[in-house]
Image 1 (tube, rainbow, N blue to C red):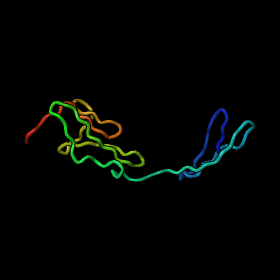
Image 2 (cartoon, rainbow, N blue to C red):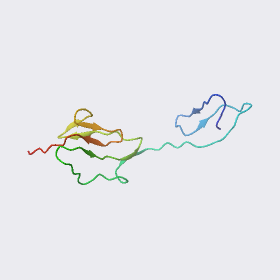
Image 3 (cartoon, helix red, strand yellow):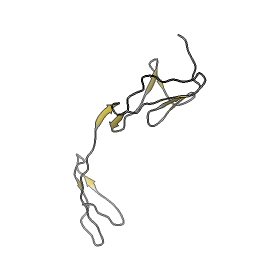
Image 4 (cartoon, helix red, strand yellow):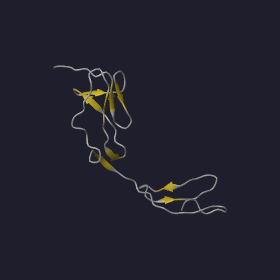
Length: 108
C-alpha cells in the first residue's frame, strides 16, 4: 500500500521485493504495486562498438562506449595498459564516451 500524506515512508524486507507502508489515516490515499530490481551484466548488443573511428590530425574525436547493464556499468579506458582518466587531452563522460582533444599521429 502506498501511503500519501504530508510525509512518505516505507519499509522493505531483506530481498527488497516486498514493501510495507504505514496503516491508513484520514485524508490518505492507497495503492499497491511491486518493485522489481534488475540486475544483468554489461552488454554491447544494443549499441555495438564502432569498428573504426576516424579523426583529422589536430582535431578532436569522441570514442563512443554505450554498454547496457544493471546496475549502470562503470567505465575504464586504457591505452597501452595504462588507465586513461579525465584531464588534459582526455575527457571521460559519465555515459562512457571518451573525448580526445588535438589528435596526433604517432608512428611506433
